[in-house]
Length: 171
Image (cartoon, rainbow, N blue to C red; front, side):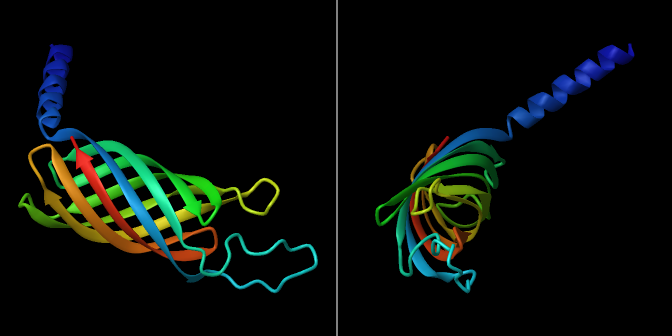
C-alpha cells in the first residue's frame, strides 16, 4: 500500500510540474564593446602580453537550450562562437534569466557563468572564467516566439565588456 501511495504521489507531482515547464531555445548575436582591463601587469621578459589588445571589440553568436519554468524563470546551457578582430574562440556557460510578467513587452534580468577560450598570441591560446550580469526587454511576437534586447557587463579574458545583444527565443 505504501508503494502504491508513493507511485501515485510521484505521478501526480510529475503531471503538475510538466504543465509548468517548457523547453526553450535561444539564439542571439552580440556586439562586445571593450571597456577596459580587469588587471594591470608589470611585464617581465617572459611575459607575452595581455590576452586581448586595448580597444579590441568583439562579436559573438550564441545558442542556448534550457527549461522555462512558469514563463518567469529560465535555466539553460549555452555555447558561443567568439571573434575579436581576427582572434577567434568559444565560450561554454550556464545561464539563468528572470522576467517579470506575461505582457507583450517585459523587463528581464539574467546572469551567465562559464568558461571561455580564445586562440590568441599565446601558444595554446588562453582560457578564463566568464561572468555576465545583464538586463533588457523581451517582446512577445506570438505564443512561441519572443525577441530580446539586452545589455549588461561581462568579465572574461582579463577584460570588461559591455555586451549589446539581440536575440530570438522559441519554445
